[in-house]
Image (cartoon, rainbow, N blue to C red; front, side, top):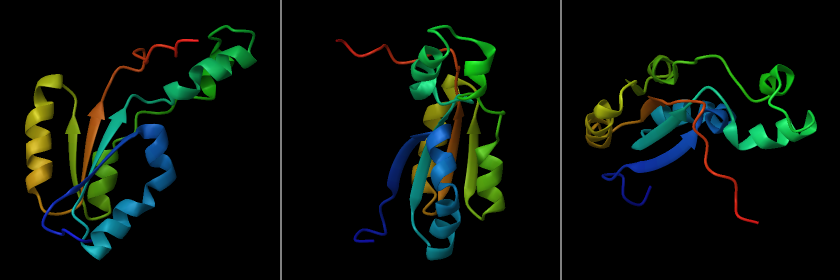
Length: 125
């Protein structure tokens, strides 16, 4: 790392973190000052519209099975890998969690639990 004194900050959703979960352990083992902020809404909302279209444009239970997940505590998983895990359940706790993470000087996962019903608006066509 060119600037090991400064944290690298990564933002991801929970669906995205599943692809790279093992890299938290790598960051611990290699001493990378990595702060990973997870938008943990228990689903892959970016896929929702596509799956709904595949099921006739309706938000069916069958379509939802393809993009919703169990409530996973990524902060706890991070701690089991040797990183610092911080769980955020209330919006008012986010600033303090980020301050703590950025000053930790070691790998941190900030697991921010959010509402699955909130999604970005569709792109303008």
